[in-house]
Image 1 (cartoon, rainbow, N blue to C red):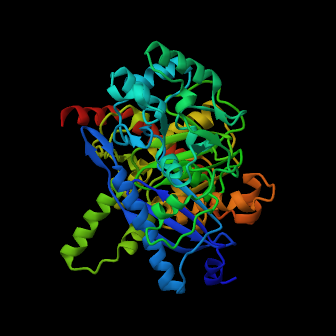
Image 2 (tube, helix red, strand yellow):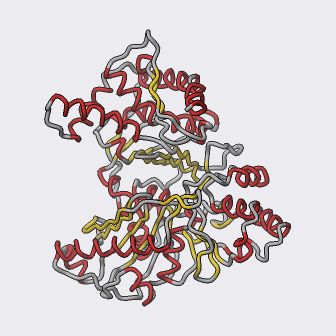
Image 3 (tube, rainbow, N blue to C red):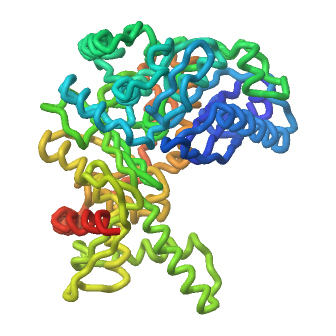
Length: 527
């Protein structure tokens, strides 16, 4: 079938992901290839000291994103979207969306909020398990500790993806990967950890809450399980033009970490992926539990329930972008024509000429705080001593190393202390846009081959579209086999292996990096 015939026949599959700055829709064909896209740009708001998106912004954004997709389909193929083979919704993970009936009780509290420190610390101790600040269980317990009036009225608590899915299907469910960011999931049962739920129920009872945890959480579903169908009301919520028909199957809603794993074919045990853009995170799929909890590691699951160790870093390429902007200004001053892709490419490739330890130069990319290294706030900073080798190659290499320095510190726990083994790690995001450079730096940092695939740039909206396709086309295959055999068909991308010199150089750099962290701390305390 051509793309037009696929859409006309209702065989196309739609994935929509709510990112932090953009809502993106991807329409794929029966070969899992993107055939149309739509998007909507949005920003979170700081309201009463908390980061949020209003429910009005959520629905306007979704409808505008779908309208943009519909317009693009009309322009490209001269055809209207009347029905689809399947739909999937995903979104930034965690956060807090409590409801009574259909009414949200407080504005959506996103993953960015850090007001949950006391709750996260108490729950981590109670569960003997690292509970991050941004997880839903931290948010609800903090609201209880703060004696917020609304908590006694909660009858449903969900994530952004779960909320959108509920409103368009009527089903209060969540994909297991997203569910694992509400309260830990047991990889054996593929649902919320029963022991932790029981412990939390005792806290709820002691605080006088009229419900138990499972009364208010969405049901956890595995990839490929029935998660409901688009209702007539849901169809109109998505397509205000009224063309889209109800009855379309919708896959379990997932978080952006899960869709990133799918989009990089990294759901099988002993695989992993690194997303490196404005922020960065790594996801390593484990064969077994870790020996103990680590504050630097978040434990979540793949969309089919395998245990994943996640290192989440608040900062990555923003400081590099700022420095490249400075070089752009210099070119403008000289009257030199500017091609930003060429500028990035030349500067990134120049870094390959630098000393493997960056000649002693040090860069901290902390635009915001970095929990892994214990910094509540950030100060971007470049540091050198008089005897260091200060040249452009080392300068750029130091910033490329600095962008993944925190990621390395977290992953060193997995690879050096826990002796985790990985067969393949796939990189995606802006850090890898210049061919070979970011790959080589990350390979040195993790002492592991790094693959990059052309399709990785399609992102999470493509990932949730693939999960929607898996719902209707899996033919009994598990998710890892479906991705390997059907979607990627053996394509593992272009791999770059670490060199011994690069590995030794990065180790020297990271030791200096850790030793100099008090300078960063002093900058936070004194400015």
